Length: 224
Image (cartoon, rainbow, N blue to C red):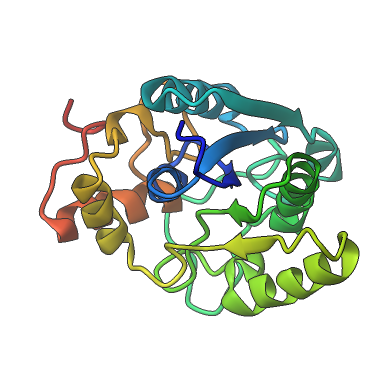
């Protein structure tokens, strides 16, 4: 990494949105990659994608955090195995059962803490609002409010900002951006249900497949 680059923390789930966000951040910052395990169904598979991505990009500084209390809290199909993952998209205006209560606030809190500790000025997160699942903590209004909380809750000289570079992109635009940046989509994972082969039916798979189709590219996971 160039000594002239300032530091940034990037949350990397292992999915396509976070991978593109990571590539964007790497273009300007010395990135510290953060992965959070929270008891989700595909936790080990997502962790593998995270490790593959940081190895691919040669990222020297990374951290893996456990938030298994989110599994104990439950109330989401991602963390509670007694709740079935839907095999279709949720109706417009309805928050999906795959929403993990206030998850992004937990992730950002850890990322901001790490950023303040290492003197990083930015925290990147690959949240998508316009063409995603309708999660309340993936909206611009949430990130604006969180940035205010960060300003008030950190040292005045820290000046940490939450950055959401793909927030208002359509999924197909994220694919195109990733292709432009040579993102290794074959290393990413999106399926909510399976860890071996994507189910192709859960909302995350449906959105991903449609994104690649609309962008005019084959998904390397579905078409290796």
